[in-house]
View 1 (cartoon, rainbow, N blue to C red):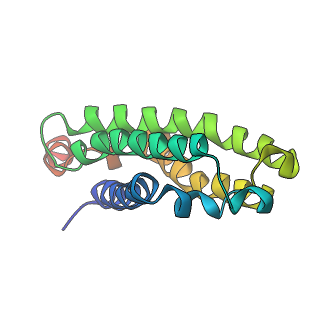
View 2 (cartoon, rainbow, N blue to C red):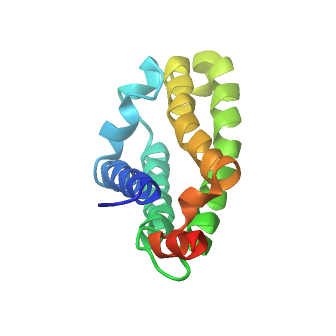
Length: 150
């Protein structure tokens, strides 16, 4: 049975793969819900391309998540690097999304959707903070945890 950290990594990797696939394969569908109503009907080709690029970055950021799933001698290091990297991205994205939402539809996006997008990232960031700072033992592989208990 996967540990708490392994379950979190698996859940996030699966979610990322689904979102990335939608962004790359169906960018118009993927972005339509976020755009302001006047822009949603006919997003520009550059907008659709940027959605696909974003999907490519999501694939790239999923690789460390997947690599951090197995237990092993370097599991804690891989997990920490992965969580620091993704946590920094979330620390940048959350305020950016919230600032853009305060611009209203002049940002080109539906403000409530930007706020929702930021709020979706918060639980991931909180869990990263918990795992990195409040209870770093959850980052250990089972063999590391058992070795330290002896």
